[in-house]
Image 1 (cartoon, rainbow, N blue to C red):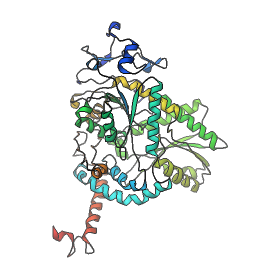
Image 2 (image 1 turned 90 degrees about the vertical axis):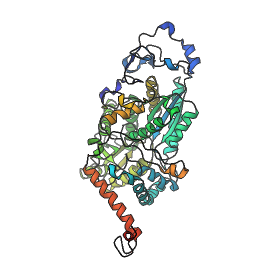
Image 3 (image 1 turned 60 degrees about the vertical axis):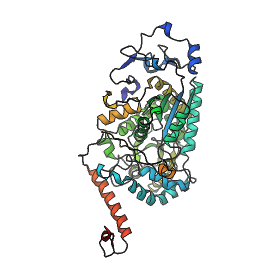
Image 4 (image 1 turned 120 degrees about the vertical axis):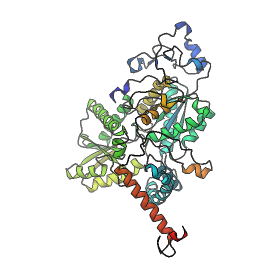
Length: 518
């Protein structure tokens, strides 16, 4: 993970040759800055300049220019006459905007095989199980959303972030348009894709708004995006790259440290007393141990980077990392947030500063789960002083750092490789920047399972038809784990319960039971 600041070589279009920074592009053939601006409409975005500096310092400590194949063909040559239109696609979870949206949002969530991972033989039950779970969970979820104003603010905040990022890019001389694609609610990813195609974007940076990569967040959105790229010829021609995680970026780290320091000063009489409590969204242990999810390693490194930055600012409070939002009977990453709060209370902790480390926007897990549930739990366990660090939202330092990340990623845009299986890339360790297909292919070759997305509620409701689920080679049908058995038991019970209700008072095996009609 420490090597991530050194950007990897751009992936080859053919998969057979690698690209290296060109030193053979003659100065006479390099257009002037004025020609470049006239052609592409982007000030200071001249990738043919051999040494392109950002804020006076060349990114990554090395000169950057156009990337060429070893045979000498420039990566940009084939599109030399193409108008340069830059787009940035922000990916996020999504959330119900009204109480009536809660159940369909939950259906989309539970229908995603990255959220509920059924054994391969039972994946046909994903939709039915999603219907049962969304119906059963909707009343409690409606109460939670009602407690924060009747809906999630995530779309509004993400739209604000998109506008702020577009403004930051423009201030740096990059004329780009930002798009928002949500995984489980409106505007859906396919809505953003339609806008990108309509606007004629031909250079696209895909930026998941999750600082750390996980197969259940960024991975799920990227798998869906890969499906759209592989099915749409127009979209497949768009040069694109993915920034899969960015928790280590200095601007993000500094912005988080400054918010923590400010909260300690504003919320507590003695800013050295509170323990800094990093609460991250949890994932099942099997994602990390069996599927190779880098989330836990990235989260731990992220917290350490922020703590190191705080130390440089003179903040030396004790800190702890725990994981929240676990559901179901399987084991999730530990320590759990609720158990850790209870233990801290037993240990005599009296002041706590909560930091939502997985999230860059306020939503249900910060406004209700942390602000209400965990605060109440802390008070019940003797923690008398409480403060919570706000999400970054549109923090100027954070947004400006995202703009820098987009500019640094633009030279690495490439087309979707039609022969993904032939692409040879380095190990997935560190989650390299790459095209959507290349990034996910590296998971598939290493058998790190990111399941293909299931159909979504909105497609059924809008009459667009179900998703065409593609195939991937990342799972082993013969593999059986404890998690699979638990999932099987849950699904079996749900189906049995459904049939029992349908059978009526005599049950499945009674005289009027359902089996007599089979």
